[in-house]
Amino acid sequence: MKKYLLLLILALSAVYQTNAQSKGVKIGYIDMEYILQNVPDYSEAKSQLEQKAQKWKQDIEAKKIEIAKLKDALKTERALLTKELIDEREEEIKFQETELLDFQQKKFGPNGDLITQKAVLVKPIQDQVFTAVQDIAEAKKFDFVFDKASDLTMLFAAKRYDISDQVIRVITRAEKREQMSAKQVKQQEAKEALEDAALDANPALEARKKALEDKKKAREQLVADRKLAAETKKAEQAAKRAELLEAKNAKKTGTVPAKDKTNDDKATSTPTEEANKTTDSTALDPKAVKAAERAKLIAERKKALEDKKKKILEDREAAKKAKEDAKNKPKTE
Image 1: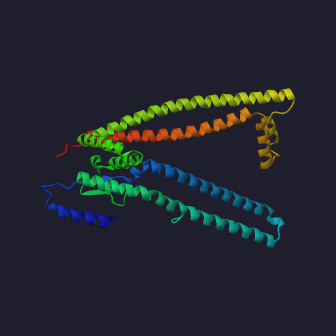
Image 2: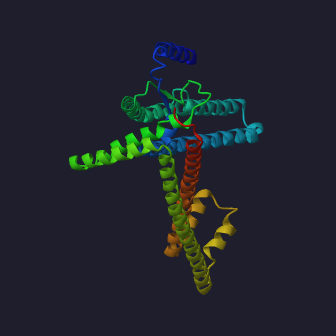
Image 3: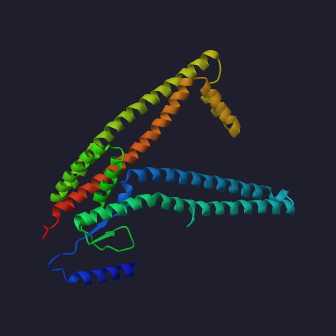
């Protein structure tokens, strides 16, 4: 595939060679992976798909544990079983292993659900990208536009020829227009035309604009982190107060606190009994239940915010690099 693309480029370059002195060939490129990561619709759908994949992985791990238990039980009881029973157990284990392999292949194989659903997820975004690239290429007179993430090997690509951010702007603007009236669309188009003109006149403006947006997101993230830390501390204090209150009530009534009782019975309790005890103990104090649930929710939100903060920092570094590239670029001939 790479060979054919390179031959195509050489052939097209030969066609344009006669006009090269009077008119230079204008070439641009996009980074499809970068675009997909910055399109909101794709990010949301990808998150849902990753949740499905995580659930499939959990099912696989549960099945592996079940098979391991069957093998351990057979190993322990083999001396006490007849040959017929041993064969029956081994056949059951083999059936379970085959079923597990089929499930793994169905979900994560080359033609599995994960690959298929990813293709379905990417297709609409790719169509939007191709449409946006065609519009940009026609408007700005590009002769060629390549995909940096494709099979074509790009040994070097100057940042000033990267139109990925322009493609993202086109897609994002199209989504915004769908929620606007005709008058608002007209006003938005005029505003966008001025923005594009400013960016064309000063390519470094885009990097500065993105850097400012990253700083704003970082400030918002810092405020959110502080708020989350305060809420976490408050929830921990509430849980501690609920625990102390439960112990105090247990002392008054002469009963064993639910926490101590659970620890004492842990060695002899079955999973079902353990769950019932947990339910009974937490039912004594609804505040403790509510505090525990809130603490869990806050922990989940904290993890999501940390992931978001990491993404913002990565975007900021990318913007900083883009700014440096724009600053150090040679003057246009």
